Amino acid sequence: MLRFLDAGESHGKALIAVLEGFPSKLKIDTNFINKNLLLRQSGYGRGGRQKIEKDKVEFLSGVRFLETIGSPITMAIYNRDFENWKNIMAYDAEYSEEKRVTSPRPGHADLTGYIKYDRQDMRDVLERSSARETAIRVAVGSLCEYALLQLGVKLTAYAKSIGSVECSNIDYNDEYLESKIEKSHVFCPDEKASDLMIAQIEEAKKEKDSIGGSVEIYAKGVVCGLGSYSQWDRKLDAKLSYALMSIQAVKAVEIGDGFENSKRFGSNVHDEIVYNNKYKRKTNRAGGIEGGMSNGEPIIARAYMKPIPTLLKGLESVNIKTKEQTMSAFERSDVCAVPALGIVAKSVVAFELLNAYLEKFGADTMDELSQRVKHYKEYTLTK
Image (tube, rainbow, N blue to C red):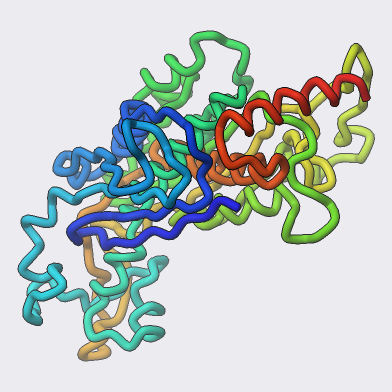
């Protein structure tokens, strides 16, 4: 089983993850990981923090000569901004009122975390609940994504919507799709929709507000039979939904055409089956998952992000010291983080898919895993 824990605060010294169960003999490419880290920091609507940090992964264990060795992998991303915060964020710093947060932001973890953990300063809450944590999750997920590439699985993610603007009719067979996504300031391959999305972000910025949206993740080349219908906690769509819902500010998840399917008759929902040397579906409204298992069609998932709760103009709140009405505190933040969400969402999906491969094929090395997947693909063609 693949699993990881991560730790670190937004303005602390570093973000750390320990990844256990990763197969040995994967020749890693740090440039692949660092490119995803750079993309996570990019996208129109990001805040000033992204100009400070230059995220790069460092491996502290589990890798020798750029190859995984089977032992737990420790990854680190060091926060450059820590130098400006160490007098209040270092573990041995003396207590200070500097940058103490006493006015919770509606929609954030501030107030509930302050009550739950009995803190005197809500900075103890926001430093860990911050979406800065997703940087290390992208590092972990990118390593998994790179392993999946060796198994013939290709993941793509893009901004599906921002505000009221939505792009549709994406051609996943377009050989220039990835290039179009990366060239777009909002990571949307539709140039017209990209321009309209930027206009929505500019409107939010003008109003000192924030804006949300959605991303779509597309996984091509996934074998059929990942996950299981036998127990509730082994269903692949449930695991993907759990992972996507764990991303900060994500409030809804959809597999395939889940939302639209709920409005249709069954005859216009279920993907009819044909056989032409192998089983295929005429359509893919199920998003590649039926009965909690991958069915061999591309897996399609969407994550929906609420507007970021840190608003420059603030929202009505209460001062926890005086109990008087006040405006919520402002922390350096983004106007829109939907483009970055696509990178994070792709990473958490990659982790879950690789975990599902390891659960099904039970390999300790990448060579074993590749061979078992190859034989399984050949076997399923005879069914």
